[in-house]
Image (cartoon, rainbow, N blue to C red; front, side, top):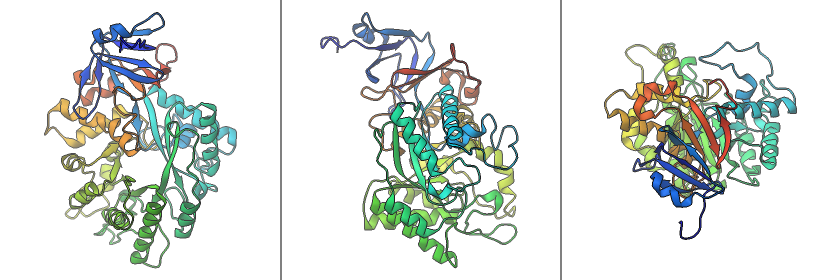
Length: 455
């Protein structure tokens, strides 16, 4: 590199660099040019790349990770509510729209971006924006929000890389199959720069949640009910057919589909629908489950075989465990949140906050996930497994594993500097680590020393 005359714009050295690739590589220094990583290795490897114009950052033993990728985060809602959250924070305000004007919606997205930058988040998935919520009760998810996202992207004002899913029904509510199919047929996914804003596909709500006894399950709740799919249809069988129709239409259109499915029966219907759609029209679209609370062990092999993913929220699991368990008879409750089985099967699942249901803090999320996994494996290996679930694996879900998600040469320089090494404090110590600096494409978007934001 030095022989070719390459001089880096930025060198960070003297740290503990966690590459988070499949080999779990470690290094001490990174060099960046034109927003991309050009070298990863020892401090001495960077010496030939340092010139008069190179900014050299001495990490002094601090840790460097790939930027955090929250695979399921409602930024428009987060910004409108913050610092309040649905669970684990101050009480919600009185019912009513949170955003009523275009200016308020733009401000909400910009506020959420500041919060995320302060937490080291450089990418996220906005899971559900579109016409289905144009008359929604919060004012946070309608098609005007999509227009604002496009506007911010065109201005170069996005502080994270955004993957967005379209929504043709109500958030957390029912959808007309006709509306969803018409939405798929008319979907405009083109953006000026997909690495800044990418419209990947659509979000569908298959069912509700176990605590409310609205998840669609094989068995029954304590009251004898079993929930139902949130699609139109005269009975369970017809509603299941409708979900199959939607998945097939998305598959044919080349759109990734993320389905909110928490009940084991809703999950199984979706996984079966994906299998049938892939048989009819093979394509690597990486459809995925959202939440998957009651995912059965016997369903996981099909998930892996079909190249599907899942995004889970350990923080929500911890917060709602007792409430969810009360929906079932003591001797007949299904297993919930099978993180250990997903890890063992090699399933590409991600961990996410679902902010603002919980705060968008990956440190607390990984600590909660570590408690769910238990202490059956080496704690450092387990920690790095979890770290990959908020960096490298979400990049795979975004079809972006070749250019983001790890600290490797050729990838974008989306980086986060931590006050301490996660290996030293362990998963349970993560909430005490401070985010000191966040880089997006090699540019500082948060610096605790100059723009402190309460974490």
